[in-house]
Amino acid sequence: MVSAWHAKILKVTVPGPVDLSVNVGALRLTNPILAASGTFGYGVEFAGMVDLNRLGGIVVKGLSLEPMAGAPPPRLCETPSGMLNAVGLQNIGVRAFVAEKLPALRSYRTAVIANVFGCSIEEYARVIAILEDAEGVAAYELNISCPNTAHGGIQFGSDPRMASEVVRAARSAAKRPLWVKLSPNVTDIAAIARAAEEAGADALTVANTYQGMSVDSRTRKSRLGRWTGGLSGPAIRPLTLRLVFESSRAVKIPILGLGGIETVEDVLEYMIVGATAVQVGTANFSDPAVCEQLVDALEKSCGDANIPKISNLIGTLSTDNA
Image (cartoon, rainbow, N blue to C red; front, side):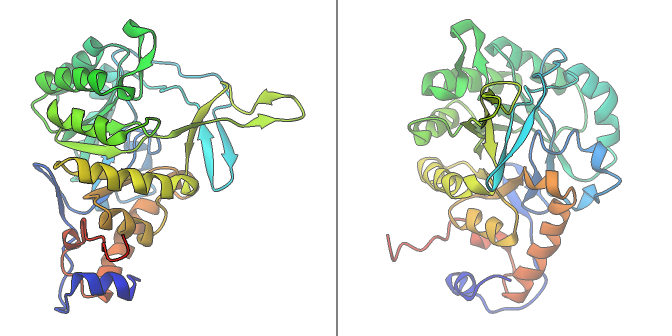
């Protein structure tokens, strides 16, 4: 249930049906719960386990210009309150997605967001250009945590200037809403957020995974097929909550919070610090139906607390103890 404190800050007492809809820029979602990229396949694989129409949105597995085989196994390992992954952005490529996956996704009411990436600015723009000719995509999410091979492998999202360049190129190629997924592995995420906003981003996803390691002391080898991987799960939630708060204060465009969400309380925390919607990632691995369950639980919790519109909660953090 929503705590008494949450209900108090809203100062609402009028009972009635709950409106879970939120506006992420020009895109209206039926509710603020989305399945995060890389944790929900292309969406269609979960159709037998989840009512996809109940979700606010599905962010599909990252799409590149050409198919990618990904990283060598093992690709996942468990960590305290989380996991490390080194999947290596394996995917079927944007053309195969349009031909093989998108037709089935069109039969659902849920917003489909295409996560796109590339190793050069030109690749980002070309992936979007292919998707622009296809029906059924509601928005794009740029993964700018990828290495720019033209500049020595530095991540696009690690520098405001580079982030601005790739977002501007994507904005020129895209007529649909453009979300930018930020990396948490930076010194000043607010600077990256502002650069993305100024270059034309319609919303920001905060944030991608944190770089980490896990080593088997017996073999003295990495527990992954690579030395490092991306840390996700409940362990990162307090860290990412701060990044969402800092980003929301730096920009005027909507924020989608992503990091360690498992419960309704987690969803409410992210929205209170400034997130318009949230993406659920690692929790999908332990329970593929978690997103649908969160929608149901969120509706009940808001009803119990007499919160008529979930959007009323966005950015309502109290400053009394600041």
